[in-house]
Length: 342
Ligand SMILES: Cc1ncc(COP(=O)(O)O)c(C=O)c1O
Image (tube, rainbow, N blue to C red; front, top):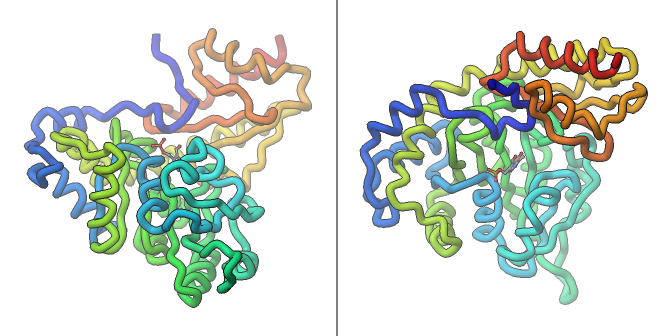
């Protein structure tokens, strides 16, 4: 049975072109620097985000945490939004691996106030931790894309204070598709960036950490320390190259399907969706004003061939991806209508 899988864009399967590229990939031991396919991926990935160098890492979490580990020293403070992935969904790794403390700011739908950031940068005092890094997230996991104006203001403040900016760009190319700009126009406002090859781009495994050559040289050693030295990883890098070369252009249709889903759900009495918040492939909706018990939704959808995560704080999230068609969107919406009317 074919399921429509709306749990995340992480559920994407590799495309036939990726499977072919993986089969044919020329590989070597990448810890010795012998894998030509990984090298090609790392050079290409760095070039499309305008950075000197990049490193293939096993996951987005790995890339973010490696960035914190390399940029900061133990006890440093990292300024970031209270709703960002590093704070909420990385298992507290920042305190375990980099040994940093997180100074969270209340975010306005993912956007941080530049003045707020500036006021939190620590001065010299024997009691204070040092501000080690500022982290931004774009596209945000709340489904919105942060404006370039906001990023630029924060980057200028960081520069003035000699603090580096790391961007969690797990969905960087979704942000660039939404804004209609090149990825470099976003990454020029950060010193390092992590982006995922999996998720909407459909590669089976892997993310990229990019930045200056000096940073990536250190990160390569840090990756080894953390057990992320992958040997014949060219098989995975081959799929990553297809992801970057062929799949970025498809993200727009995932966004269109998400908006379609939002608009169709919003037509159902009692369901509320903020359509202005649907910038990428993520749709959040609230069905508390229907008589339907939202805690049953994931189970009842599953019985009808649709996979969805249970609600978080009463709010449902659907993620569209390359394998979800506009027909699927209508079929999901009709199923929800039937469940509510039942
Ligand atoms: C914004 C953001 N950052 C980082 C990650 C972590 O990526 P991974 O699941 O590959 O560790 C995710 C995953 O969903 C994410 O949404």
